[in-house]
Image 1 (spheres, helix red, strand yellow):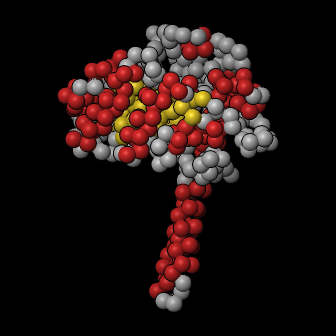
Image 2 (cartoon, one colour):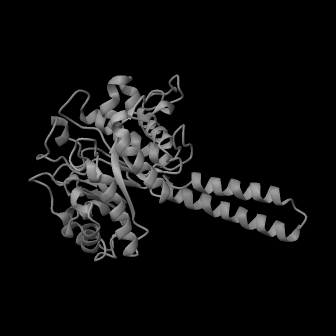
Image 3 (spheres, rainbow, N blue to C red):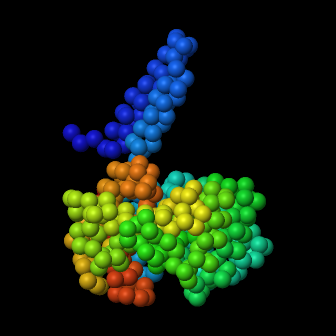
Length: 360
């Protein structure tokens, strides 16, 4: 008989809570029991509770295709497959209406070409009032104020101001549970090997360091798009696909952890030692470029889900859950850029799965 990871964790949590109750009883019956010993046991329990938690998997919902299923059909597909998170790249009334009552956790983006507008506090307040406040039944988790903003690219000069304004607007609307952030990517980094040497590139420091410091001051996460596919040339393919069985010379078994820890290292050096990182995109194309095949994509997605669900954390952040959003729900035949951009889907436009994956 196969037990789901949820069933296993419920059992583990039950016995751990019994253990906590036992400790409390012992403390009452034996007042001379060492407070230090009791505290150590309780801290151990808390650590075990954290480690046994099951991390949910989200999937990005890109809509740049002329053959995609309807929004209602798509949200049904999320629910049917137990996908508990969704990222959408612009606010959409149609999508939000379909999400009402589903409890799917949502990242909603402010596109880069709107950052200049939201650098005005009144416009940021209006954006929140129009796109967040009317949807109390939608489980918004994050607002990504810009995606992969880089000096010289659209919106870069306004990213920090827009981020600050959206954060303030959410607070003013009593939506403090929704975290404002921005989605960055590995291109902003330099000296990424070994990962502990990761730092923001000189040309990106003036953009990224103030953003990181603002996130740190306000207990906000950083969103980061992590793609071993685009770093695969620097190591054996097996390292990118999670199929290595041995640690490399600096203690890593896969490219995903290495890239994520190099981002953590850069964030810490910029003053963000308390800033958690949410992996807002990660994927592998099935066609359109070197090593892009259905076999490699299936291996990557399957192993990434298993890695995140197993909750080992990374060598730099052991035991810390990695909230992760896979890219993307569908192949999108109207995406621009490299040919691979049209082949990251987990599902075909007819809603059939391209790979056999379990999301929960």
